[in-house]
Image 1 (tube, rainbow, N blue to C red):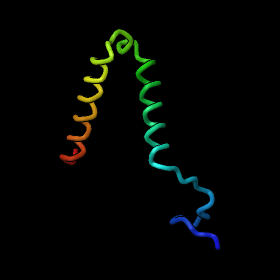
Image 2 (image 1 turned 60 degrees about the vertical axis):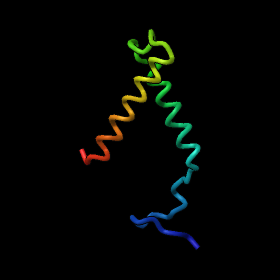
Image 3 (image 1 turned 135 degrees about the vertical axis):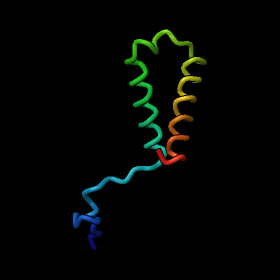
Length: 67
């Protein structure tokens, strides 16, 4: 039996991934992106962590407020 996706495509045309795989991929993307930023090159690890924490907190607050 073939399951159908919402658009009528067979479900076997999709790849299901585990949550851990998604988190690992997002982490790798963020690390690669930061490595490409010249302004991030001179930051100490604690400074980079603080900047990331601030950015994610701001993003979360915007999401929670509906913006």
